[in-house]
Length: 267
Image (cartoon, rainbow, N blue to C red):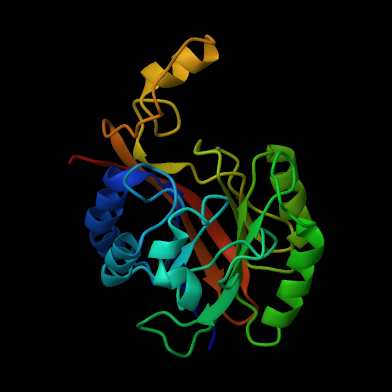
């Protein structure tokens, strides 16, 4: 008998405030929304908002997060992170540098061991450095995942909206869901595409929303004015968890529903 699995995907976690939002809100959301599986992008989770560290990743796993994806900042703090080397539940983009780690995995929800979910992490080519063609490697990786499961989720960490839209259309009917990360601004274009793939251009970010994509506004504005400025510090005001809920029918891996999630959090 076919089942429906509900997956929460969470946009780029920025700094400690973003991490605390996930750690505190996820248990409540899991219970209220009936969530079976959770994927978070954590490439900005380090205290200063760039890279990942072991303790942060362990905190996410201890909170019940199933898979952690990354992006172009995965190389930061590399010497600190055993997870990037071991990669049991942590992914880094398939087409970004030759750093250690893996870009895809297949695992099961804790309460549904009979269901297998494949997750793939890819980075865009537009405005990105050190990347190899995203579409070709995505197709190759999906063909391998299809040998194990029909439920496949793709985190496409990319700058250009057009590239994300193209990837969604390219993968329609081949995967269960494609969600964009990286720009930190949640888009309002969530939909189930004609052939059964859930899509959203960007999940947005999880962290302080009072500044500029997670950073305090003062130094960012000074930079745009071509004036001396300090380093971009992470803002901890007006914290939100942003992402999406996706329902997937398990027999064929087709998405049946997608909706945006935006939850406030008080530190």
